[in-house]
Amino acid sequence: MRLTTTTIFIFRNLMTLMLACAMLVWGQNSIAQPVNDLCENAEDLSGLLGSSDEEQVSDLYTNLESTVQEEDPVPNDPSCHNLQDDIQAPVWFTFEGDGQSYFIRTVECNAAPAYLEDTQMLIGTGGCGNEFNEVACVDDIDAGNNVFEAGLELNTDDGVTYYVMIDGYLGAMNDFCISFTNLSLDVSQLERTSLKMFPNPAQNEVQLAADQNILKVEIVNIMGNKVLTKQNLNTAETAIDISSIGKGVYFVNVMVLEDMHTLRMVKK
Image (tube, rainbow, N blue to C red):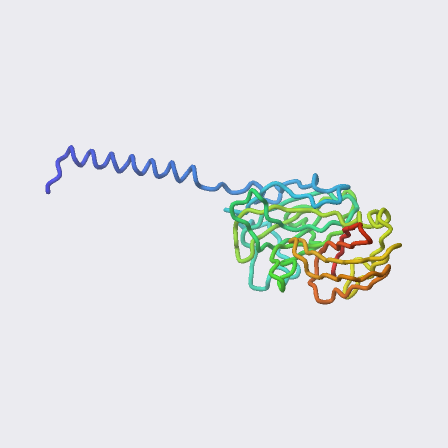
């Protein structure tokens, strides 16, 4: 069929209109590069630190469309980022230390439609670029138990500014949050309950002592899963073998008579 000049004109204009509509939709749905793709634009998380003994969770963040910058550091110990995984999609955060100890990790947010589960973390001081001085680096909290979120304990110095780089394993990109759990409050918590737990951090065994009989002990990981339970103890002092559980932060639920006390334990 032979196309007339008018038909060709209409066809071309129709194609132009369709292309314009497609570009508009793409522009509305495309994801902007996160502002904290750059270290100097790091998001401030200082508000998550303080005297609360509850886990403090950040707003929702993403590393979608993040790219490696020339100034981004390379970990001193490549094994903490996996030997075969270069930094690929990092985003940056910062906070001011207050002299207390925190467990810092990435977590899933209720608002996240898709969660960046497998993360890596690099923490330093001094500043961005050549001024960055690495102080800690971690890949998985407990890969052996399929806990692939990055998490570590950090003893902060009062008034020191810290920089945190979060990257996805093998360049993975998605949404996540960061949480801070204050570990320095355990001493005052133990004093209030007359229950003693030592050593903490612990490696193979933890001791519990109370002024009344301990009936039951449960150890729960940061995902809320019970990893160890001891029942029918009926003793004021007991030793709990923790050699079988992975490194990380745990919650120890101790029932003393009819009262349940929750303590934080760091397994090293």
